[in-house]
Length: 293
Image 1 (cartoon, rainbow, N blue to C red):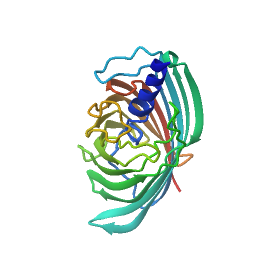
Image 2: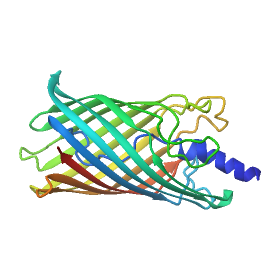
Image 3: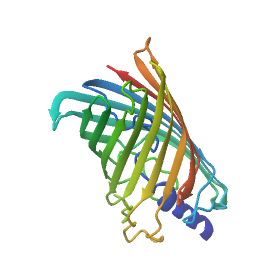
């Protein structure tokens, strides 16, 4: 019984709910590019699966672990004609709907849940658009709108506010803009949980992409991401080793296709994770629709 309670506690606070708030790999190639003035709808579909829960040393824990999640995320972006420091001013909101299924054989856990996730509001981002260079700078706030129960090993919400600063850029090496190199960084500052005396350490997330336009309507490339926790956890309820920091890396192919009939772009990505510490390690698949309105 004590072993079961210990495993549930560790996975609830240090393994699953502890990792970064923003979904890694959501942007892929041209991650540092924001659209021009207008109103846009984006729908992200992400399936993630893992049967590995890694400890602080990067070794798989022998607890008969498996998790699968599916997120259907709706994003509304508005970019104005107004310019600040030569950049277009924009804003957006992200609304996720999430299904999760968790099994931990060593603890007798077999749970699933479907609910609204934590909503992200970005009241300001700036986007620069030059002939061979584009950049974006933004600030966002995660709202704890997702369901949370501190006694449960499976939670859709994170139960805390998070401030996020985003900075990214895309560079086109050739005048025809057939090749693109991009990088996007996000810094997450977490605030104290609402139901527990825990404040998770700050996180640094980086996405990158290399792409080639093979036709005017198709781009192929390689995309990846990296996540590091960079400060210690805090709080009286954080009875684990607060100095342990989680990390994860992912890499995989991406194909972007423009549908003239729908006037939309479809972005398909598949990542394989590796070198995880203090978190899960698995496979993440994305299908994203980008539609100007």
